[in-house]
Amino acid sequence: MKEKIILLAHGSSDTNWSNTFVRLTEPACADNKHVALGFMELSEPSLEDCIAAAKEEGFTHVSVLPLFLAKGRHLKKDVPGMLKEYETKYSISSVLLPPIGEHPRLADALCDIIEETI
Amino acid sequence: MKEKIILLAHGSSDTNWSNTFVRLTEPACADNKHVALGFMELSEPSLEDCIAAAKEEGFTHVSVLPLFLAKGRHLKKDVPGMLKEYETKYSISSVLLPPIGEHPRLADALCDIIEETI
Image 1 (cartoon, each protein chain N blue to C red):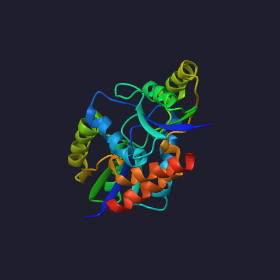
Image 2: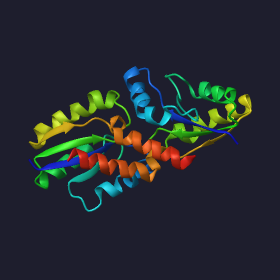
Image 3: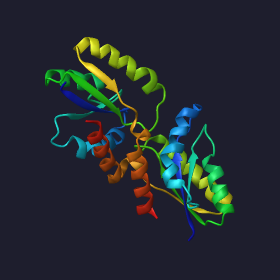
Image 4: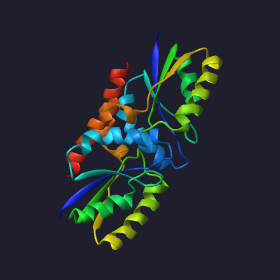
């Protein structure tokens, strides 16, 4: 299995908003062909763009890591529906990971940010 | 200046959603009377509840750290408007910090999460 990780943000018509995600993911994506940033809606590249690119690059599986703090309707319904469609369309397998806000590393980072703030 | 840090999440009618923020902030809030979690809307305690509590505890300043990944309308307009109102109402000074998604520590945490995922 050749796996690509897609960091999935919501997307926005405000480019300042989406640029925050470009900066946030820069260290993770830099010189790493296994990681890419994509957007659910309103910004580009779309989730479908990312999956099409992964397929073309020879990946057989994508893991989608949501750049969301918690699981709402988008992660419970919309994204699973999109992935189901793209799995068939691009003959690629996929898994939707828990949002980053559920990860203990994020709680650690928050403690560090607070310490720096005080 | 006696400062309290309010970790401000959006809020939701879905308690699973808001509980993610309770867990995310548990290590930061545990045994620390200088840090509290609050919600902008739909969940409790509200931002106003947190500011009223801070005032009662003797704090003279609150720093609001948004548990948002990027700055949208809420952080550009709604929350500043609320803080302006509460500053007057509770005779307390406040500052709205950048959202956690703009902090380099979050980019580091994301790299760690990806490494654990691969």
